[in-house]
Image (cartoon, rainbow, N blue to C red; front, side, top):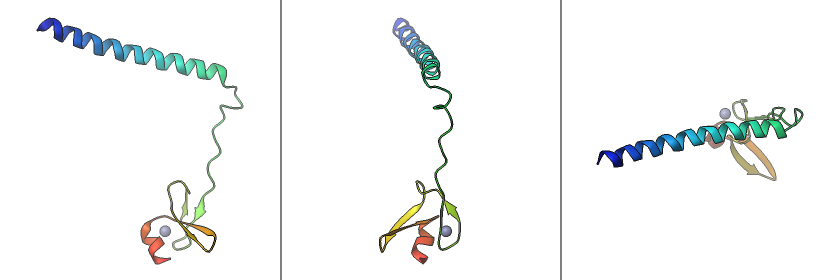
Length: 83
Ligand SMILES: [Zn+2]
C-alpha cells in the first residue's frame, strides 16, 4: 500500500520536474531563435469608440454590431441596446 503511494508521489514529482525543465529549455530555445526585432511587443490593437458612451474599447473584447455595412463597437450590451 505504501509502495503504491510512494510511486504515485514520486511519479507526480517527476512529471512536474520534467515539465519545469522542458518549459525552461523551450524558453531558452525560443529566445535563441527569435531575433530581437521579432521579439518586439506586438502592436496594440486600434481602439474603437463606443458611439453611445464614448468609451474606447478593444475590438476583440467589445460587443460588436454590424449595421448598414459598418461595424460598431460597444463597451457593453447595455450600450448596444441603447444604440
Ligand atoms: Zn458604452
